[in-house]
Image (cartoon, rainbow, N blue to C red; front, side, top):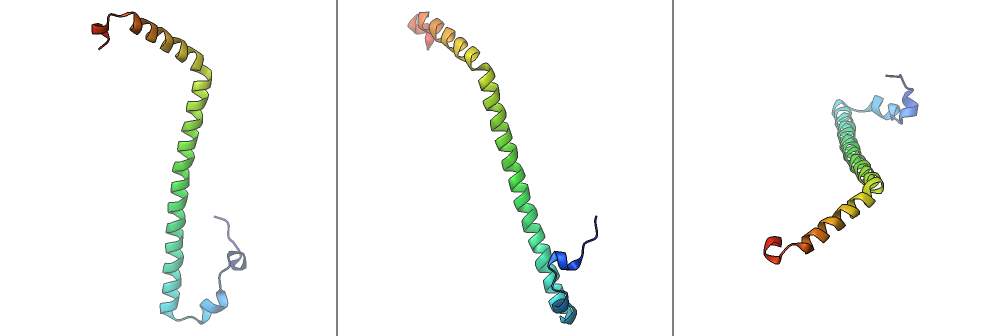
Length: 89
């Protein structure tokens, strides 16, 4: 991982340098909690991206095969209408 300048990370160094051990622990836990929440958000966004990708693939597949599907559905309905009524049920 690339080393970063603490100023680029918005770390309040002067505050932390003068903070008590308890305050430092609280700050650490707060940041770790924030990281955990961000990871949950990222996971939810990745899941949503996957759902959207699948929906796009279904749309692409339908665009490529819709005429064939409708043609076959029409043949099926025609055949079903030609059957005697007791055979349809």
